[in-house]
Amino acid sequence: MSAITPKMVDSINDQIRAELESAYIYFSMSAWLEDQNLKGMAHWMKKQAKEEMEHVEKFMHYLYERGARVVFEALEKPAAEFDGPAGVFRTALKHERYVSGRIDKMMDLALAEKDHMTASMLKWFVDEQVEEEASADEIVKKFEFLGDSASSIYLLDRELGQR
Ligand SMILES: [Fe+2]
Ligand SMILES: [Fe+2]
Image (cartoon, rainbow, N blue to C red; front, side, top):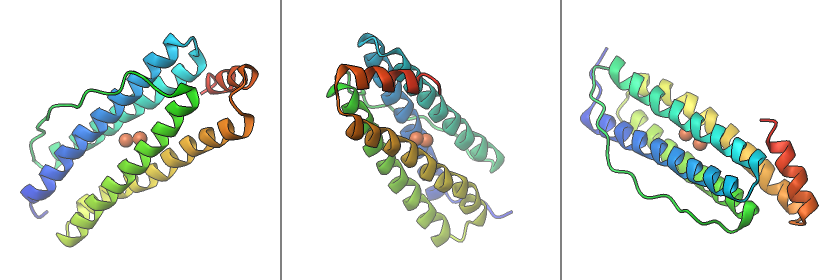
């Protein structure tokens, strides 16, 4: 096993920060949805936040396995106000696209460094981002299709509560 480069370690640590920040954002969205009494949507978003925490742990575990150190950075304060429930999910989709771009750049670095172990680990995240974008996109499209009447919000809240 060849040693992981400091540059790759930094990039993974920075992604640990980004995954924590994702959880922070989704917890903030979940809290906002709770405050709007949209408990189903709040539940969906809380699950999303917890998935991000799993991503954090995956990266941490990987660094341990490579004998590298996990170093935490400061998190940015998440938004506390959103442009309605549809706006929450539009923002979540935009955020997932941003995260996909970050994972792609990490993969570029791993390949440039001929670090196949990291590339293989990252492949899971590339696949995961397909799912993450698709599930957010599906909800955004449902909002577009159903409109933002009280009855469609009620319907979507019930559906998302099933997650
Ligand atoms: Fe993630
Ligand atoms: Fe995500």
